[in-house]
Length: 246
Image (cartoon, rainbow, N blue to C red; front, side, top):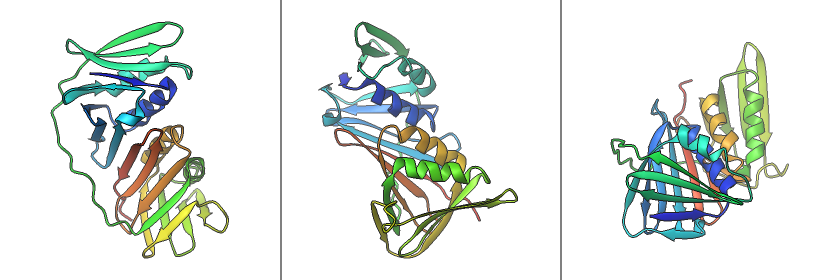
């Protein structure tokens, strides 16, 4: 197996986006592409990554390959990457090799972990709200909410998506709409409201917003929220987070 990703800095952002949620997980590489689906240690959040062949400059894989990775160690390696470099991923003699290719070729060799396999099914939720917006706009709204609370409420009506937080410290309200231009797309099948952990959402958005300028937010009353980031070449990074009671 040998994969070449054309922008080492983008791969770094992707690794950071995964490391924000999971400690250890498995990349699955098949002749069709690279995937990863894993739960966070508390099992209230999930990340679902899909990178087709077209997301890579070079892609060589004859058979399914499972690569167990410690994401903190991989994150440390990728911190060494720069925007004008490429990254080559390969497996050799039971090791996961990461080669950063620029003026020099720097090769890092990491152990492939034997992680108990857990085939997680795809999340199926009947979402009632779908909003497409700039990633930075959502990140700013969550950062505003974090000033007063550790939870955030998403409320959707026909014309308005509201992000709201309150505590004895105060209240924060951020409104998005198509009319104001803060929403790029907006679909509401029925009015919905749900609360989520700000710590998790901020960890997701802070890293993934560097990967994609646009995020698609989907939720329904007392259902998980989904955040989808599109990656160049047809890739998708998607997070799911369970709602908080109350």
